[in-house]
Structure formats: C-alpha cells, structure tokens
Image (tube, rainbow, N blue to C red; front, top):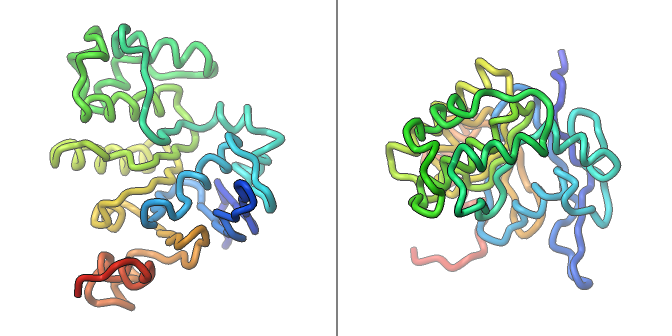
Length: 244
C-alpha cells in the first residue's frame, strides 16, 4: 500500500546567470518520516530547500508540499512548515520569548506555549534573557524552537545541529524522533554529521553537483556497504581531493 507523500520534487532544475546549479532532481518524502539529505558543501541542498518552500522559483520542474505547488501556494506551505535555513537571524535586543512571540504573530494558526517550545530544545530558564548574550549553541536551539513553536506539519532543517555540543546533538536527536512519533511531523534535514543522519533517518538522499543521485535507507546502506555510511558517502560523492 502506497504511503502519503509530504514532499515531491520532479525534474527540479535551477539556473543562476546561465549556470545550472540544480539539474533535474527528483525526491519523495513520505509523511511522518525523517528524510536525511546529504551532500558536500555547495552541492545544492540549501537551494533545493528554498525551492521546496517557495522562497525561490525553479527554472524548470516542480515541487509540491502536501499536494500544494511550491510557487503558487507558497504562503500556505510556509504556514504549515517550520524551517531553519542558513544562519538564523534574531532580534538581538529582545529575549528568546519575545522573539518567539513575534514569530507566532505573523505565522498565525495554532501554536504551542512558548515556554514549552523552549523547554523542548533545552532553553527552559533563559526565556527572558536577551538573545545578544546567547552562545552559538543556544542560538541554534532557539532557531529550532522558533521552527516548531507554531506546530507545523513539516520541518525543513538545514544543518540543525551545527554549533551544538555532544549533549545538544543528543538532545536534538531525541527531539526529532519525538516530533515524528508523537506529534506526527515530517522532517527533512541535512547534516554533515553522517552518523546522526544514519541514526534518525528513515530514508536518505544523496546530492552530488546539483543532482540527487540516490535515495536509499540506512539498512540498505549497511547491506550494500559494510564499511558504513561515511565510506559510502565518500564513494558516492567521489571527485573531491583524496588523501588516501
């Protein structure tokens, strides 16, 4: 029996100044799963995330989210989605709670308690603290809280554990699994920490030089490649400098 799809991209391409940076990409993300998106720096992950959200129009092809067109329906898609893409930006002079409140005001719809959102990301006792005093890890936690505070159906997270210490990485791993299992969210995320993707993802996509070259599962990787996901990633993305 086929499962419902949260995201579908078909023949998605993007050209900047005559140079094609995304080439005929196809991807399917099942509802209620975690999809890990892997690729080297500059491979095109962030550009694809932006096109899925309708923040950037494709040159060719189509992206849909819950059956909605990313270009025509992008405002509705944004209301149903929480995202963390590139370096998060906050109102530095405001507190964590005030930043979340402003986000909820323009997102609309149902929302969770702000203190609950902060607690979920491990920021229970800093709600009234100015964001200007936050460390990199605290900012990343706050960005994740902002992405989920309006109770989205879909989370798109670009390097969400960047800047976190080992405890923070473990906390976010548990949180992502909780959100999928208990709150029925769908999560699309990228990370350069391959072992984390291997632990949480139901399905993994690999992008090389602007093309999604493979979609597979962690179990399939183990079956096909006994040396593990890191070595498999290096094999698929071969072409960079090697020191072997």
